[in-house]
Amino acid sequence: MHTAERKPNNSFFARILAAVSALAFCLALSGCRSEMHERELFAMDTFMSLRVYGGEAESALGEISELITRLDGLLSVTNDESELSRLNRAGKAEGLSPETFDIIRRALEFSESAGACFDVTLRPVMRAWGFTGGKHRIPSADELSSLLEKVGDGGVVLDSESRSVTLPDGAELDLGALAKGYAADEAAKLVNAGGCTGALLNLGSSTILAIGSKPDKSKWRIAVKDPAGSDAAGVVAIEHGAVSTSGGYERCFTGPDGRTYWHIIDPRTGLPASNGIVSVTVLTEDAFTGDGLSTALFVMGPEDAEKYRRTHGGFEFIMLMEDGSIFLTPEAAKVFTPQGAYAQAEIVTALIP
Ligand code: AMP
Ligand code: MG
Image 1 (cartoon, protein in one colour):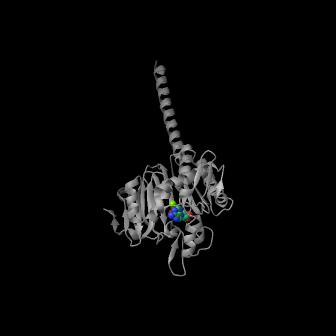
Image 2 (cartoon, rainbow, N blue to C red):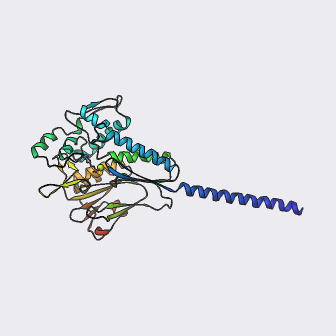
């Protein structure tokens, strides 16, 4: 009886012990799963750093690196053998890879919505300035006006059945304003497919995508670069989403006239867009829209950018201005904290009535 009474107790304790060990094992495993895996790579003409947490993080990182390298190989305008360069040379291509066709289709849709400030056929103008690959130079007004005759993405014809693209005479595509955003969104699909719990994909500081959550569930903190210094101009704290920045400082040169010329071009003039903005950081759900918008808003200028936001919605932005002030849209004001040289900056929240 005595023994019989102790037996169930023993098995009860054994079960508790087993349950506790199983729990400890699970916790240890989930600890391993939420470990951060990191990789750096150089692609799309920039340094990228990728952090993935949990699930099959290491294999997701491998797949993401392959994906970005493949997209770079397809879309680069400095690589003569890329699918995009071949399309640009021939003016027409059939049976394009699904990725190239997809990004061109989406780029044209985005461009139509962004209006005259955004055009994916700016390649001839970009080449003349030497911003991609070539030597920097200042094209003459005559040269720019004849090059601008070739610019206009409204005339690009697509056929989704044959995945063919036909460019207007002399037009050439440049997807530099959107490629990194596209790549980040495609990479996010791999993070999710790998059962990972979170990721911070930094595709060259101008395109950052935060997915899922950090192991400690704290917000992702993303620095906005101070173009004039090495410190950040501020930090954006978000649950998830894309933080995309365009700034004249990213790719620029000083001309013999002492002026600075940059790579974000106003398609209406062929000149670097100049309207008092130092940089625009856009907050969106997806990186493709954010990447496109940061370029487009930089060209639009502050007031038109804000009008565009009020009409289209779905995004917020932080604009660093040449006079040292910062324009913040309502939701951006809630998540952005200025710091460093911008800690005491004048904050403008009502740009237009
Ligand atoms: P981002 O750094 O995302 O602003 O992209 C800048 C790149 O977009 C440039 O290097 C060009 O390849 C391209 N680009 C410049 N100006 C425009 C524009 N107005 N519309 C579309 N693409 C542009
Ligand atoms: Mg962009």
